Image (cartoon, rainbow, N blue to C red; front, top):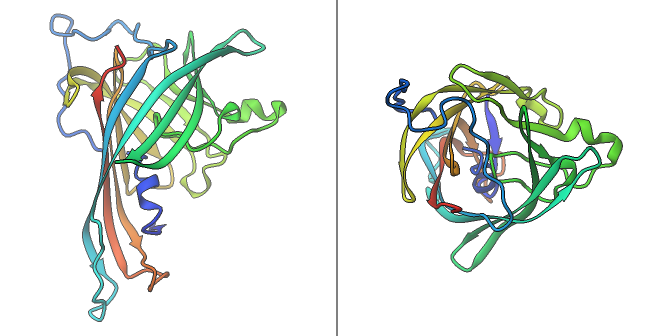
Length: 263
């Protein structure tokens, strides 16, 4: 299956982000993470995470020998700040927190959104019917304001508690994800990740895309929250202004790394 993406959309799609390279499984003696399954995504008004993002376009394969254009801006970089700006309580008593997400490059604003997340006993939930804009945290897209009657269809389980190696759950059954189909998440191990913010022991969680076998994605979670993500999409149709139907195919690798912890 070939993914069709315009050059202008690649950056935003690219915030959806690896194949784990090396994971070191921990024993009871070596584990410093909350290995008993008591990790919860940290939430408090005022918490703020900062990330650096990078997208690389590689392995360009032109449609024919007559193609003289080559992909421009093969490396794009940006910054992402996520701040918990407030909280609210739903009718069922669930406390949700507003995550204000700002993606920028230098002084230029790329994207901005507010997303709502809440911890329950069985998992971290994303209330997309309360959200406005494109969600960058944990890589979910939303459709904006939705009626109360549709709330159940627009809640995503971002994490399932308690986390443990081998755990798998359904993130979405495919509703509002179009050709991507259902998406599942699976904890593939616990290992150490080094990012600009420091060294963290993380749960590594693979995304399993039902209808996108050429997409490989892993996110890394620690006590400090989201530490790193990496996504590789192969065989993406590369378009240009003069060749809207495409001039060839490329591979796109996008990575997000924590540069400052929230606390």
